[in-house]
Image (cartoon, rainbow, N blue to C red; front, side, top):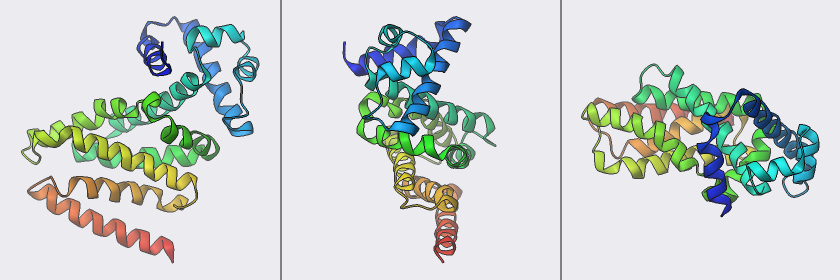
Length: 226
């Protein structure tokens, strides 16, 4: 079975785990985060992860099969947790979700910068394995459908826009990890990315808002660059 299939299998079985199994998985993922920060992806081994987590190495292979699948799962679940938080805190599940998404992703990234920087290359190098597009589809797709219901968006572009929003969020974090974006500019870059994706496709008041919001973001970024 491929690493992609193994990562999907692990994700699909989360809800069926017992509390003890969930606790063990949490220890494994926490150990993987810690070792990524200390040693980097290439130097980290499944043996090291197992020792750090206090489990047998065969347990890791039983759950994830490979190191790539384990780290991809860690990256996906961390991102999904942040997106779920953004959804739950959004003022509404239309444009309010997109604003909440930018705020939550930037804040959570900056709360644990070492982990975020260690995982950023995984999001780019293991795109298919991490499968963030499917995670975003469940939330961004629903927010876009809300805009369709409000007659502000054509339903034919939902899938394309979902992919573009995913790319903009990942790109912002990756650029930040490479120190091309400053900490205090991260959220503005994300908001600007959302506006750039939506403005050519939304209509009515939302189009006007997206243009004005893009201007505000550009002004804010100009101030942070001074």
